[in-house]
Length: 193
Image (cartoon, rainbow, N blue to C red):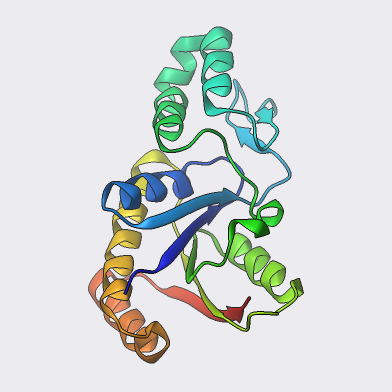
């Protein structure tokens, strides 16, 4: 069964884009989103993040940060991340503003706060299609190494889900097996479009 996937993280575009990149390479129908008000990338200090509007091209962010301090943003992995992101899609998109992108079968989040935001957003929409959507939270620390691990774990789950005829019939078993094999707890909920 070919499912449509969405990868959603907060506002820095690391975890969702790492998973989007890997799933896209593996041939999955996947999109990615952030949930914050803006895209926030680390700056020279915690109090000085680099803030961009959703829709700002990744290439623009890359050029801006390279101009500001190429050494710093190469060292902390932000420039390589933006280069990867621009190879996947043109610009970051905000989950709440992209309802017109269509219905997803499965939505992955990478932190519980984002999971709650996606569930709330789905519950507040008009449920005209009554099509189920599975929302899964796979908790992943927000750093480059953990994002790569989280992407591989998300890929593994997607491969299992794609093997099913009807994910609704086997989701409990898939989650139990995943948690046992990977020693990671998942949160999941079903909502509707």
